[in-house]
Image 1: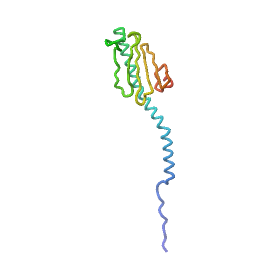
Image 2: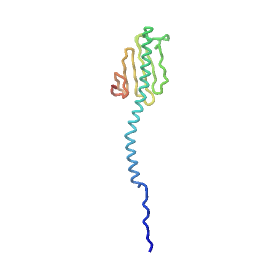
Image 3: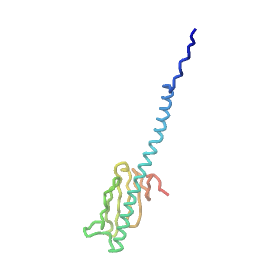
Image 4: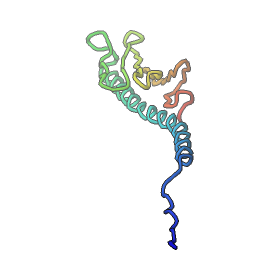
Amino acid sequence: MTLRSRPAARAGFTLIELMIALAILAILAAVALPSYNSYVRRSKIPVGLDALSAFATRMEQRYQDVGKYEGETGKCAFQPTNNLPDFTLSCELTNSGQGFTATAAGKNSVSDFTFTINASGARTTTYKSTTLTCWSTKGTVCDT
């Protein structure tokens, strides 16, 4: 009489176990990706705000030196550089060269943000159809 040995137990996962793991992974991704995308988008905003603030500082220095924001061309004394990947900077004179409004308009993933600063230092954020009297990276509330 010969003794038969039991077949070796198979190693691995069943199809049900793999499907459950995949479903859990999909749920985690569905929750995490929107938050991550929002974080990445908000991380692009400070670059535009820094450029706008630096531009306003240069304009104020010009006013201290010359007594007006207007340059020789009848436009803002300095034209903002537009080498930012996510913002387009612009400047407009007000009050016959005694004031200005500088704007950073978002493009690409931050196209719904527009930031402004004027000669008196008043800052505004326009996010979609909401306008705030501060610079906000969130768009709906002023940052503290």
